[in-house]
Length: 354
Figure (spheres, one colour):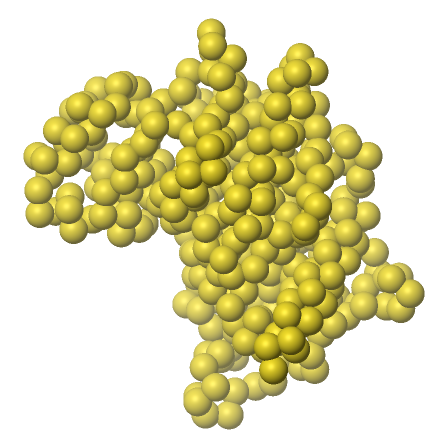
């Protein structure tokens, strides 16, 4: 990076993870070295309108004060977002940001951006598709079943029978397209399934039901494009029964062990699986890969991948890289470098097609 780079942070958004996006964006904004970056801030309101703001903030009322506009090009005379930035950094968690939608917009605009492309983002966001792809690549995933909302509303008894036949208790029921443990329910009796499925369908039209694994929750940070690298793994020790939204963002009582206390062979296996999952799901730039280590068997399962992991003060993605020798400011620089690299390679492919 020989010259100062103009970087535009994009944050907020329409998903249920709006507030987490604001916290992550504040941390990224704080750790971008100002001698290397000129930082601009683009806020997407909860209703999906766009506006420029001075800086990220957790004060939603202040952020939403004043004019904002739809990004649709046929709307009448929208205010200008300012001149193009050199690179865009989406810090958007959940649908309408982490799922390939904002990435598609940036691809159409032909501008560099940080993180995974359309395919990797879409696969990473959709838990059902991600688990199917990982399984097809021979990677270990927790036994699961998936149900569209229409199937549940039209034949709930049949859905419940299929679950009982296929999956032992305890179970976890999740919306397929969401993060930050929003909409997730732990089910310890089959009688609790209907309410858990109703909760999941509040957030998405597809629900995932998976076998609950008794064991340790481990996380790994991956960084790179064609030749990704894995950090040391860390362990999450939830304060509650499982690592839910309140445990993550409100109570602050979850414990993190960085690096995780694991035998070298388990560490090597996690890092190998993390890179393999990153490649299988067409990720690029960054991702956090989550695992279960089953008690008794020491069997590892790939749980999920997050292509825009949290960047809050408690988030594992930057913490794991810091423990692996890459501090937060340098991590952000590396992510920008990878974004430019991916754009150059993508542009070369487009040029060859002409």
